[in-house]
Image 1 (tube, rainbow, N blue to C red):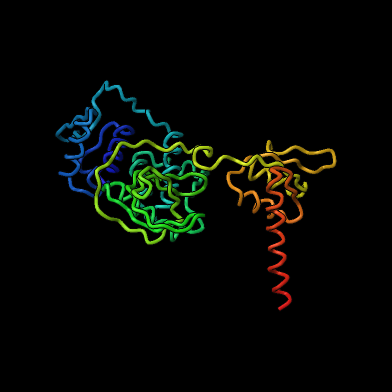
Image 2 (tube, helix red, strand yellow; image 1 turned 60 degrees about the vertical axis):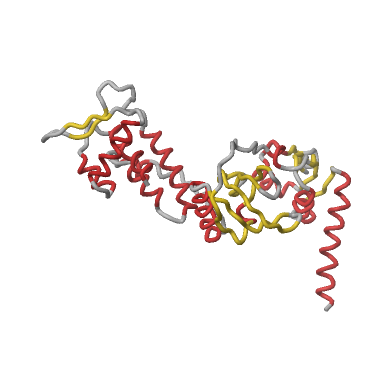
Length: 305
């Protein structure tokens, strides 16, 4: 991609005093004419590059230009590369690895430098998720509508959407787009989509990123208080943090936090078996009891047949 190549050229020029056009052409596996066009494009973007002919000639950034050649420190570059490794975990290709190699040209220690930060943005369903990300990303770049069947707690529906952004949030991937059915911007979870296809192009409308705070996305929260067996302290620390509970005199844990839907409260309490008791909200205590009795009936009837 031209943008990737131009970023790579600029990175090399920030790290090296001068390079030749043949070197850049070989590095990026393109013709010298393509490199010359890229250099012209960079100049038009406001970066003053100087081209010198002759034996000791080459391409360099104009002396005295305000860009500091140490703009990207080794630590800065390692952080950038860690992020690019994370994007490769869902791309299904090695395009970001190739960009990493271009960015690190002339500073070979960067790729091997900090490999202690590993970011994997894929999921258990990577084989199903990666093609969706790639298809939606291409639709965003080409301003093409996407259609899909969408599954929600209220049932399934057919959606036609103008896609604008792919978002990784709450350990999942989402599409932010204009839904023709709702005539409004909506957030769609990729793993709830099936029969995804790309359609006609559209004229982009003004858009801003969504407010992703839970209170904006979800229903008003349930303020949950529960008494939890201390054997499950590790779960509370992992899922909600050590500030989510306090230890009672008898050793039991008093848990307090917000939940954003009824099913999550009931399912979460039930997942502890007999190790948790829901104290509030009181109206959901009956729902937990009904859930437990339903499980008992199902397995009791199965054992009797």
